[in-house]
Amino acid sequence: MTTPPPAWSGPSSPQPLPWDGSTRMPAGVFEYSAWMLYARWRAASIASGWAFPADWARTPARAVCRALVVGTDPTRQLTALGAVRARDGVDLAATLRDIVALYSVLPGAEPAPASPQCPPASNPAESTSWFGGADLDGLGPAPAELASLGAPAAAMGAVALGWADASVGSLLEQQVCDALTGLATEGYLRRRIDELYREAAVTGRAVAEDFALVVVAVNLRRVRRWPRSLAMVVVGDALGRAFEGGQTRALAAPTVALVLAKADRRLPLRLVTARWLVERGLHVSVPDRETGPVRVWREPLPARCEEVPELLRRLAGQPGQAG
Image 1 (cartoon, one colour):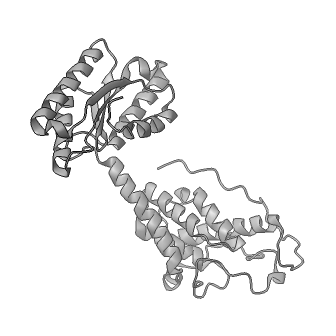
Image 2 (cartoon, helix red, strand yellow):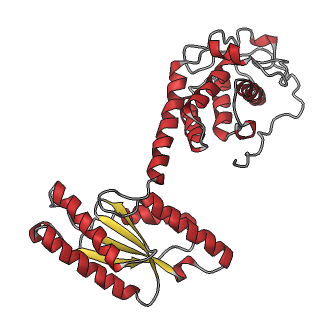
Image 3 (cartoon, helix red, strand yellow):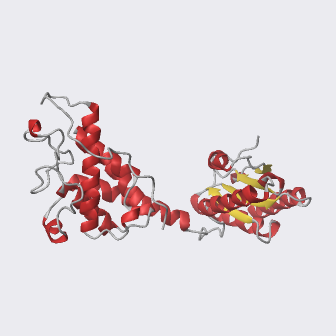
């Protein structure tokens, strides 16, 4: 289980704050109301069956509470919350039950409002917040009661969309190999590079001293769809012969392949060999008039791991033209 984030800093002893009933509440009262909503939501979610209470608190949940208290559309915050729940390994059913718990503790939630925006208090002069002197230690509605409460379809849809997008992204990142070319996915390459930087942080030796990225870019702009796919199969086969062992070979873009190669004295020869093998394979598989020159070069790894994603994005955008 992941270490839970720091608890949201709210008043240690909530006390009613004065409010004269005007149309705009002071900022402090908004924050106080959001904190109370956050606390009651957590209690209701745990009561409805949330499996790991210590993992419930997440930053997007706080943003959802603030949006509901202010009265703005919380769609963006709900989508972000759904994405975080998916990355935390929470299934969709539990994620949606959590949202039902949220709308069950909103003022006048019998049933929940028809839109994701929370309505204003019917009589704001009655208390300093939407929840007044409510007992934050109470567990809120029982699970059976939660089952009969609804949440707006728009809110449920926003959460489900965020959850689905993050889930699909996680599946793509976990995929190790491109089925057609045999090259690893970019997500797997990033994981391998991240492991090297973590090891370097322990040993004190820079990653660039032992490893480098080899870039292979081919100009396939005029190649038809099937030969283009076949061309990258040729690239994958050539790199497999030029870079053996544990050197990771990955597909970064439809016409760009990368190799996380050992930066030893044999690397210059490997670059020449890779280019020769790719050019020979393309000559056999694809008509010469349809392919441009093959570019193969060594790209140094940055000093900091945080710079790697931007480097990979730049290399994936290589047009594969001579230059």
